[in-house]
Length: 214
Image 1 (cartoon, one colour):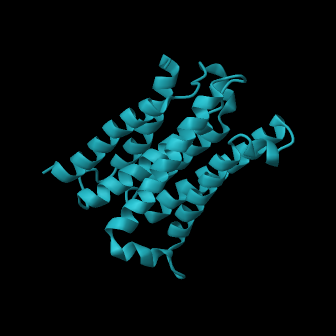
Image 2 (tube, helix red, strand yellow):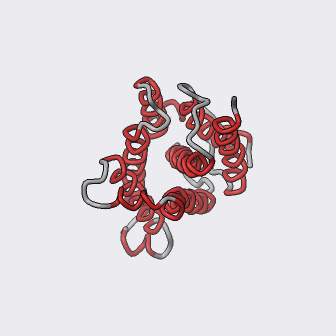
Image 3 (spheres, rainbow, N blue to C red):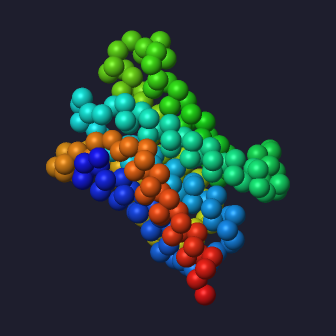
């Protein structure tokens, strides 16, 4: 893994978790709750990193495999609460908070995005690579929007408006900052091992600080 890749991935993960610490960083809700939401933050960070444009002919296979691990992390975030908290199922019934429907939409869109990027499914849906790339990016942006709104509107870790503004700004930068990224060394695609290692460190800090701090 090259230095730009390591810096880009670690930067995305650190930025997402740091935004959640900027207000009331020591207020915890218990080991179970923090662990489940650490998985959600890690999934969001991975999604944002994947939105940074790769150079043509870049490590597409690594980008694809990392996407599967991000989807697995998002699924783990969702099923963590469903398996361990019986009240969560009521948030999937009619009348549930809008941010919960946004989270479900983000998860479904991410699954569709991952499936349609696989060969040979990609060739069945798209006649050429240009069409696939355009659709893939639009779906990715839809995932970012719904996932970011899920986090912002829930208000669990972003109680201040400026925290929400920072997360939105980070998402916009990853999606639309092509001119900026063109001036920097391309981050390429990270390996699943680096994603899991950086995520484990960030997640452990997130859980421990909120539950062990006096």
